[in-house]
Length: 254
Image 1 (tube, rainbow, N blue to C red):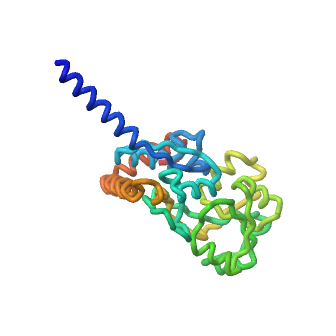
Image 2: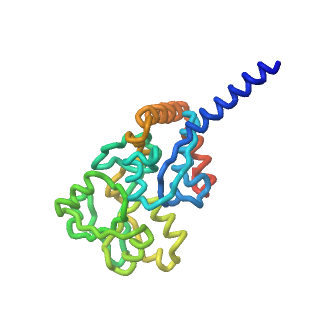
Image 3: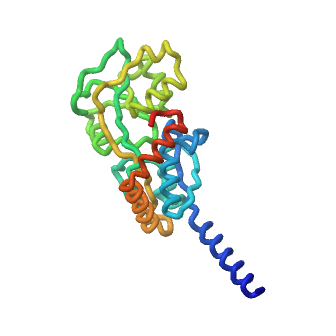
């Protein structure tokens, strides 16, 4: 009996060690309602990533920090992954899992200073667009900034960009449609909100991915496991069910 108990204890210890080894650190930032340290489940996207990771036998520990640093520490292998990002112009050291979100980036503007109707980025050459420090946007967007087609100003966070827009220091602010309206409801007055409108057309749409570090030990294998879990949960419909639960916990529509 004592030999059996000893064997069982060793097995439990080995299992415990294995579980601990499967805990990964994921860098992230504040982007309510999708990511946020004080939000239920860490936000809808972070909650969804944690559930997919759980299905893959992985426990996630989120580390909140400025967005630019969040990607840098993942690229350097200091954490196993970073949540959440679009396709980067430079994917060196990173591989994507997902997408966990489908962003629809629109332009908010002042109603008394409407922006031109547009079908493409090249229709906005005379519009000064506010962007947020550390955000990914898309490779096409940054190509048009670099070649001078788009004029941009950078602010430290989304709320600062909305304040610059209200003050007339920029002509428009690019942000996910849902995130923009959520932030306006949370941090701005009804009078301020009434001054703003959002474009009907999206300037860009992009997938939101977990960027897994290839510099961290076992990164490629981790990405494969997480993507396999994501694909299986999507195919079974479980992903839609979990997303609806997380949306409800965040006070959003299903």
